[in-house]
Structures are given as C-alpha cells and as structure tokens.
Image (tube, rainbow, N blue to C red; front, side):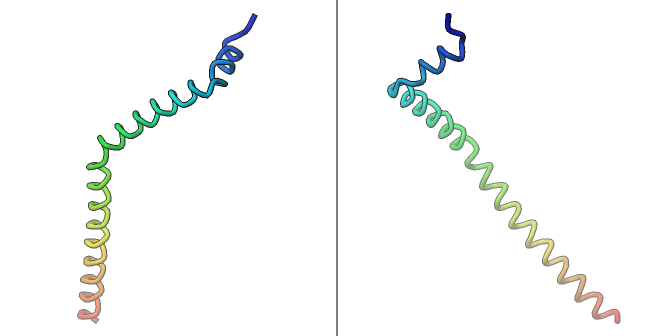
Length: 69
C-alpha cells in the first residue's frame, strides 16, 4: 500500500503534469505581480523622495551649524 508521499511522487513524475502545474503557478505569480505593480512603484518612489528629503535636511543643518560658529 502506497502512502500519500509515494502517490504524489508518482503523480509528479509525469512531464505533462509538471508543465501544467508550472503554468498554473506562473499564472498566479503574474496575477499577483500585476496587482502589486503600482504599489511596488509607489514604495520605490516614496523611498527615493524620503532619501532626498533627508539629504536636504542634512545639508540645511550643516549650513545652519556653520553659520552659528
């Protein structure tokens, strides 16, 4: 009597099954990527903007410290 692991191993040895599973997974990953695409760009732009603001604040602080001394 085969257990579930042996049956699954036999099931996945078939090349057609492997291709179908791979197509399904690729389809799911593409759908998830397409849904989060805008949010990923938003996060990237936000990080660039945040770094720019931090650098401007640093520059202004250094300028202010030089004027006081």
